[in-house]
Amino acid sequence: MTYPKLEINLRKLQYNAKIEVDSFSKIGITIIGVNKVFNGLYETAEAIVNGGITVIAEALVSNLKKIENLHCEKALLRSPALSEIEDIIRYADISLNSEIDIVRELSKEAIKQNKIHKILIMIDLGDLREGIWFENKSEIEDFVSEVLSLPNIEIYGLGTNFNCYGTVLPTVKNNNLFISIAKELENKFNFNFKYLSAGNATSYYLIEQGLLPPEINHLRIGGLHQFGIEYAFGKYLDEYYHSDMDIKNFSSNLYILKAEIIELNIKPTIPLGELGFDAFMQKKSFIDKGNRKRAILSFGIQDIPYENIYATDPSIKVIGQTSNHTIIDIEDCLTQYKLGDIISFELDYTALLFACNSPGIEKSFVYD
Ligand SMILES: *Cc1c(COP(=O)(O)O)cnc(C)c1O
Image 1: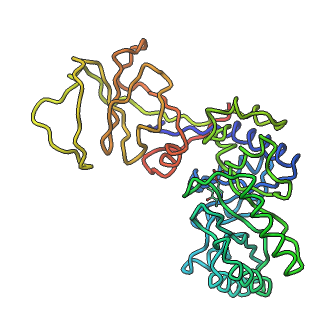
Image 2: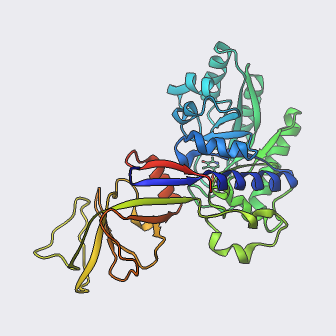
């Protein structure tokens, strides 16, 4: 057993995915299961596929490669780069697109590989990340018109995204605007979008109020089943919750970071000597609390920022971090910690993202 270690509960993940798939399908919504926070872990993708998810999305094509043998459709959750078209066609069935030059290249490569590639056409309604700007009507129409004519390219749906860059919340108003753009395109080109994909886990906030327009039949979701709460609103779930979805039955606390005590002693709480800057050019200030018992854990800023982890023993206080060390105050703990003991932390989305991307943190799976 090596530490630091991230434990991921696959039973809870599968269970949450199943509740999510079941409750969203009850209201006519198909979902893509987003695996990007796990940096391409096969086991987490497999767990949500076992829970009923049929499409897995990753942000990197290298991560789609890792789940190549998983039995489901695969989506690239952003626009392909011109330099990676061959791999996109090889490893992704679906990608998000808003640049016609890229779709042309996808078409050429799809012909070469004798594949059909599906694209989700992205419209930007104001969040200012990907997508054709919603007011550029003729650009949107030209895009759709050409895509309809490109060989080996199929339109998966029309998509938009909220809350990622601009933190724009999904509302009835911007969802209806999105639907009206879709309808105009459908009338003009005489076809129907299979999916109107109006966002991510934050759209759950409209669903639970019964306000998501019924034309929206698709979402791309990660955070909801990964955390058992909508993390942006999690704290307020009780206030917001009044829909008949089963989401209250979600399991939470799916992730535990376990780190080993590598030094334990009693030291002063203020450094001794003249103070300069640390390696991150930060000047620090300290409060004198006398001598206190403290311990060093074997992970640091390069792995996970301490602001995003929460010790399961609430009397532990993280007092600071350097690249490879995390220092905790254990003076007030009832447990008599000793060298080699394991300290556990819960993680928020940011910490989970960092942990999964840190080669210094072992990933392990539990099923209890
Ligand atoms: C990350 C992402 C999602 C999923 O977001 P969650 O908050 O995890 O549900 C959906 N769509 C796009 C384009 C994304 O980048």
